[in-house]
Image (cartoon, rainbow, N blue to C red; front, side, top):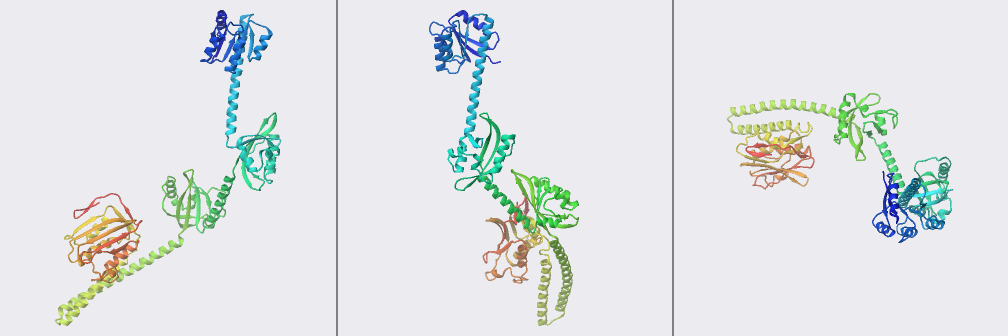
Length: 612
């Protein structure tokens, strides 16, 4: 329990002692007793008290003079005059000087001190309540005056109180403050909004009805329209009903909302007109939107479904578990690439579909997905037909190649037999030339077998080190020092990539004349990757360079370098020869961005040279 601190001033030592005993019995009061006004004023300089009780007649200064000094220096502290003097003029002067209470000494001490304690308690509590009220009013005033909303009171349709922020409303109206306060508040509102605002105001006053915050227009003298929004409550102001209103200008926000609505409308209109299916899902994979093309494709008749429709309802039952797992991963941010599914229409019929998925974000988290779905029925049929056609063509080519190879082999054997049987030099010369031509034809037949396989399979990511190792093992490179400096590079190329390095090795062996060293390296050039193949042979002559990759041009069949270029072109990779004649070849293979990547670290070796 909090005690009230009381300063008691009296020149009678006995009264000081007795008063302390009586007033401290309840435990509510804590007394400090002083025997003179001078000493009391000294202690007031360093200590604060909840109340002062003072005798009237004292030698150095009487109680009323003491009271006047207290009121001058310590305004507000409860002051009770406790004296044996009971003259009426003393009481009047004491009260006029600011005393809170007066009590005359004498009579029954129990009753007297009980009354004195009561006066002290009631005056202290009254002062504390006044202080709390003043503090509350101060906070309220600060709150209202510094509020960033217009706060005002309407009574009998006129503004009777407003805070400083209300000046924004006055400015928006185009009137002076005197004009605003002298007329009905509703005269400042746009004519189309006046009936609603008047009706709501009257319902608040008469029925204490409440309405959510709502917008309205203010039109000024120049005809400019500004948007505001407000809410209000019913209060009693000066003993009469009124409304306490909170309002702020929302012109910018209103126009922004209108632009957003227009943008959303255009977005919906655009999506509705797209020829491809667009579906939006929530975080539980329920369909919340499907455009016209999608409704027609899946045979749903209305834009919004009366029953929940899940994304899993749109796929074949056998694929639902896989699709659910795929989208659960997408919720964690692991978005799949375009994926192919078997779609299911509302009538149960199926068709193949490719789905592209993107996230929908709300408050920095994924709240759903947007799907773009493409029917690939025709493309799949064409692909199947193309695969069937390629299979037939490959089968025909294999049969033809087999038959031609057998007949060419027989022809070359017959020519060799004729060379053995004839002694005529001219005939032998002709037979040799015929045998050479047959050999070239055999090489060309072998080339067609290789060439028919280009592009028959989908390109794949292949590690360059492994391809080089596989290619060199098919050739005799024991006398050639091979150095490979390529670190964990994969390129996206046709599966015949090994033929590229095989033909480069073969070209060095058969046409380099004195090749003893081959170096393969790579480096980045801007966004591209350059793979360089070099040997120390005779190189390529200036005359041959322009025709180097032309089909049929060269010292032998002229097909090897042509085949290299065709294989690399499948995935947009190019090759060029940039060596100096007489100083070996320098082939540069240019792999564009997106067609190469760095694989996980491995360690291999080729003829003792590190590949890592």
